[in-house]
Image 1 (cartoon, one colour):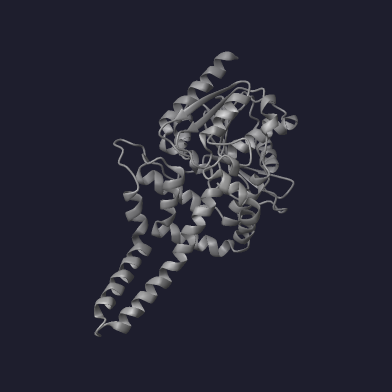
Image 2: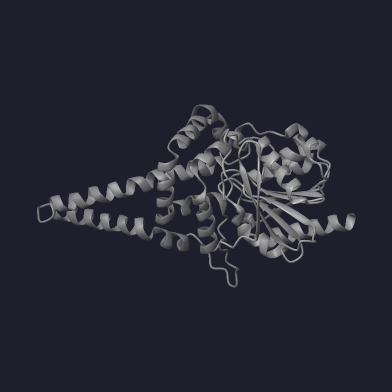
Length: 376
């Protein structure tokens, strides 16, 4: 989320600098070659070549270096859309909705996080589609959904869009499953805006998410909270203004592997495969920087702390032992203050536990869902 936005910005700035540094080293080699400083010239040439290799092949090298081999692991890929639909909202947003699985099964509505899209649910789609009706939505401005004309990316807006998708799909007694910002949208709907719900929600699954402004429950929380107004908010507006340039540099960072470094450190625990790391980094790269920046601005104003005790539906809270973007303390707090909540902690795991620890995540979620079905 916010920390990931900052990390990617550092990666993007380095990606812009690499070609200029390589050109400078090449010119230095031309200038000092065949002179008394030819040893210096040689070092400049080697440096220029190394940077060129990094610029062109860094992704291939770094994703392997930063990952583990896991024998027999199912590797994620961009799956084809199932039955597609769209929901037009009053603010002009067109929400992309995709349906998978058993049309007569228990409906599960999936809401992805910031810097992602429907494809982030690869492992959940594959695991649950045989038995359940899966309804997946792209949040505004991400995936195939369009941006709102009024540029509203607040959590209230995300929650209202989620409610519109539930109504449009005709889902009866759905289970809502959200990751990161998707979990915040779900909490906003069931805790703050529950009066707009026209159908009862059977249960909620909150994965790697938080109940308040995420700068307060992330790594370096004190620092992030202190610099929110003087640094982070202005920085978001800069990213919005320079979004096209930042997006180009973001793709440069994907190719040279800078983004893979940031994704590995901030969202994985170290047991991910090279393909899982590359897949998640690709999804982040596909997200427009202006959208992620506006999403961050919306999350700065998010808080449902006082409404947690009023949540009446059963909740499964999935945390990760090494989550740097939503630390486990946030999940423990929600488990304590939501009346019908239970907590599952993935270890080792980080913010992309739905990918890295997908088997454990899916097993915990399936147990929760089966228990809900038996209680009816």
